[in-house]
Length: 211
Image (cartoon, rainbow, N blue to C red; front, side, top):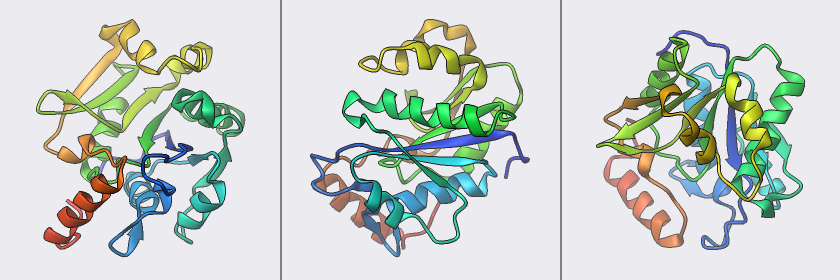
């Protein structure tokens, strides 16, 4: 486990889930929800505070959170503007309520298979203080979650909602650190019922054990 850090976390869970047909956060995987799995990895890595950004499915997001979590829900009133608008909502909340944090791990609720060790590696890399953005890679492919240090938050907040955080990531490659991991979970994206069926099969085959 990485040492305690001053990194917060933002979990993006405000999507409409149109292709899935049900709120992704509340989908069951074994004896837990997708959101609970994501929160577990962040809490074990000592991210604090943790903000979960919800949208139209706020009630389902709240219901999917484990009772013991310290995470708090922030509502994006305009989730139709896209994922970047949700990230901005989370960052604005952190700026207003947790000014001492130095950065945030940004996780996606539809990437529930990220290993705890991966989150710890990203936090350790961010703690070295030489890069503003830290991104995991698996077999040279970038995945999630990523770490955004506070130095780039203003740029993100100034980026139009119809753009993407990739605009900020690509603006200066020199401030980006890639961390190679052995965790294919950083690439596993759950968007459709078929994706979910495959995920359940994979988890069942592995005895639903976390890496």
